[in-house]
Image (cartoon, rainbow, N blue to C red; front, side, top):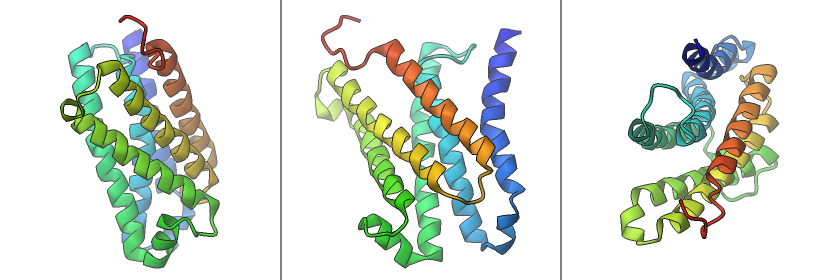
Length: 198
């Protein structure tokens, strides 16, 4: 029963915000490319919830190896979703994206989004190049987790500042879950203590 409850809660956390966004009246005035870009952003927040859940091994029925593999693949899909999100916005409004990338945009949420994006790219690069970096595992994990934390915090602030298709209650709930899951996983793994024996 507990297993079904956990999986149902995770699925609801991922799908309810999407359903709420799909019913937004603001979609009626948006181009298809912009809508796809927006939903890619919503999906990205869902993937950010999955990542600490997988690292912390909170999903019953998944072995440690399966959780690790899923974490990697979700990370890849997250990067793709971010690229679709930014790429779609570029197609619909290149000047706004350029201003955001140059940190001269008048909208505060843009800077948070750009910082989160680059941190996500850096975290993914560290994940893909772990062997080549030749770092001790605990040092590598500290760097990877630090970048992931910047991604999470930046993404949450970015999402909360935007008044768009995401419904405010479901958006707030999803962002809160992302922060809570991340904090719990960090506390569980104690990645900051590189001297601690495993």
